[in-house]
Length: 148
Image (cartoon, rainbow, N blue to C red):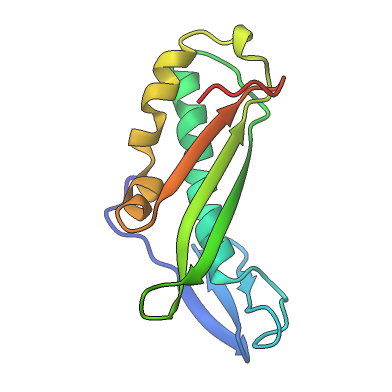
């Protein structure tokens, strides 16, 4: 992404359901609050935040590995969101835990230590979110070995 600004337009469909329009020509994404407020017809904002962090981390890891002409596919990522009350008793996202999994064994990848030491630094979303919310990141290979 080279644009200095990006925009998302949200339009209320009904109640707590919103169409999220990301760019011209792309289909909108429906978001909704879970019951009892909404109907759960789409992801709620907390899951969208988790998806943004997971997507950025996955893309950053893939980009860093591909710079060394490595093929780690298929990557997967699961992001858990801890939600709870802050000191003022307001519901907040208290933390995010991202678990990335490479699609191949670590032994098949070159320069992996170097990539693992730096890929998070280039993740725009995670670095920005991390300024306010703790984000932990672990990386595993296809055999289940924890690499980071």
